[in-house]
Amino acid sequence: MNSPEPKIAEPARNGAAAPGRLLAIDLGSKRIGVAISDELRMTAKPLDFIQRRSWKDLLSRVAAIVDGYDARGLVIGLPLNLDGSKGAAAAEAERIAENFRRSLSVPVFLQDERLTTFAARSDMQSAGMTSEEMEDRIDSESAAVILRDFMSAGRVRDELPKD
Image (tube, rainbow, N blue to C red; front, side, top):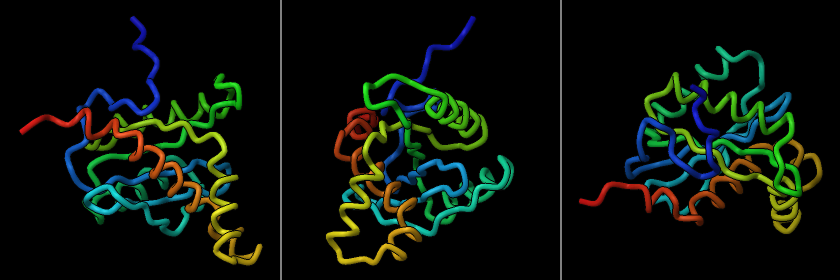
């Protein structure tokens, strides 16, 4: 029996994220953008991007960041087409999300990432960054936008167990 398709901003089968930091990644073909939230999930800060090499390397680096920041969940950008349909990139993101679900002890979420690179570039231009600075930071700035969008949706708070 096939498992149902993962839903956007839904927790993985391994439960809802406990309070604490969230890690977000923006999957690219060459670089993976990375961002982390504060413990109250109010802000998102870009981290250094990860050079994309192999699944084993990506898993190792993401697991180290999760452990190092004591992150309680992983948010992965889901690159839907502008009309909301899923293409090859979205299928790849879902496949990677499922691999993380099987390998990490934190819940994994998917977040619609349409236009996040555009928003990140606009934010950086407004901050007066040069095009060279933007190219070095765009992946992780996009991950921060994905994380902010996810946190503002409030789904994690809604899924947490009540004390």
